[in-house]
Length: 150
Image (cartoon, rainbow, N blue to C red; front, side):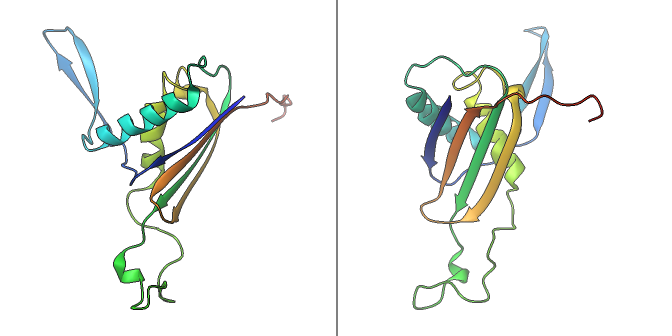
């Protein structure tokens, strides 16, 4: 089985996790250090829920493919509207693709799959492109026999 959808907008990274002890609750509460990622995660969750259309959570090992498209800076564009020859081909700038992926993984938990620990194969790309978006593909991963020597 597979689930495929796109989320339009500029992806926001998940920050590092922060934990603090809440004496009233008598437990540790873990929060995302980047509060700006909350609206993006909500947008991802909404798109995922729409793609799932009431289906049950994916079970077992999963493969996740994420392609992030970020807009080119205006400095990369020529006066005629084309990309300057000196413009870099890839967005090798912050935020890094792993933090972008972490935000999406967290947002899909409980909607597409039970836990992001089910992800055993992950393919990530960050590219320039319009409109800004993230293309998501989650599929069940075929279990392959691994030899004892591996």
